Image (cartoon, rainbow, N blue to C red; front, side, top):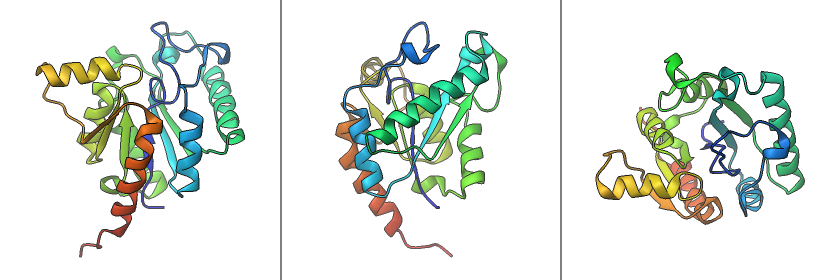
Length: 194
């Protein structure tokens, strides 16, 4: 494996909640997300989730509880014809200053090591400044979706409140699928350097 599309979870695959997703009962897929994941699988594009989950560090959910949510999420995605290769999560709170919490790139580097990925041939899809900053820092082309925090993130970018910019902007994950497929096809066709 050389390339994947990285997806943030909350705000890209499922609805973001101000009080965090603490159980499967609170988990709601964003409309069209499962169908989008099916299209990516049918296009042969592996999907890896990169997600900050401070619910663990805050003591709101155990690692086992998060694993149960992820198992059910993957089962529902597979039932709809999609797939997720792997999920990498940061359990820490922002004040812990860990190396893995986005916008830091620890999770992306770990995925690259474990999965033999060329991050420059991967794509990072997220809805927040942290997602776009992490992807940019890791050398991944980035795509902002306007679900979750995406509209507010785009507003900050357009108003000049931040200099962080994605390569592309799409309304949501379903609208991003054609862009992702096109970019991943181009990435796989790049000549090998050396």
